[in-house]
Length: 166
Length: 166
Image (spheres, rainbow over the protein chains, first blue to last red):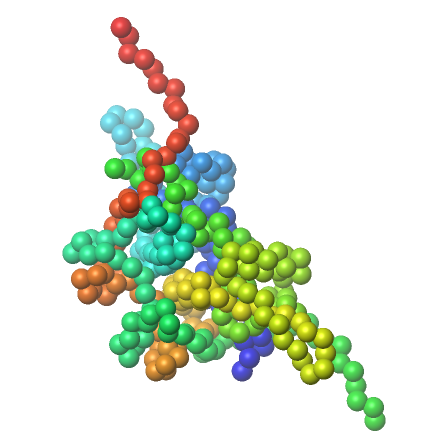
């Protein structure tokens, strides 16, 4: 089986990007992870157009990654802030993996702009690859991808085939 | 220290997205991981406009994630295919983390479209979060992010401040 023969869209990466692959979405998720949950705070911190931010938050709540939670400051009227759901928090591995790559290849002398801690024990957290035979993979280990049960054959445009002479 | 006070762009996630955050780039990287390296094969498999694919490959080679390698089929003229460099292969954790999230939340009954194996031992590979005190984090564990040595204070637009009456 050749990867080129399988449908490019029947893929968990492609499906995930359909939900969080728009520009800004991963940065909005990062800020939600970091506890910035109010619309104005998000807009100010990200420097993002308010209509774009509104669109991204609508998509994130619509796909179940975030939810709107009411709050009141003092006697003022009820407003809403955004929080990640369990499904959204499950993207933590993706976020930490992204940040780890950036730390290794782009951080320079200043060092990592952020560090991650295991809340329960305070240990420093990194994303890694583990195999079910107990190996923690290193940079020299190679990962091979194979079609899984949910793969589908691609429906590529038929190519012009020159018929053999009879 | 509040995350909202720190510069949004001084961030390893934001820096990584500058390089691989354009539409299609992660899918091009996925195909390169899967050994699809020739321009025509990438264009056919992805169903991507050829000028967009050419732009993405130029960016990936320019930023050191991929390289052009010459090949010849039979007696035909030399052509080039694309392969990931070590820096590009180091994105494997990001790709597997993305796919894992999609498998958990979007794959449905058919199951994962792809599975990952540790090449050396054949074990099934997943991305996970590990802390340096030896814990493999589970869905109920929480990760806290803290400003690191490379963080920078944000330069947000100054707000109108009402001066106190003298």
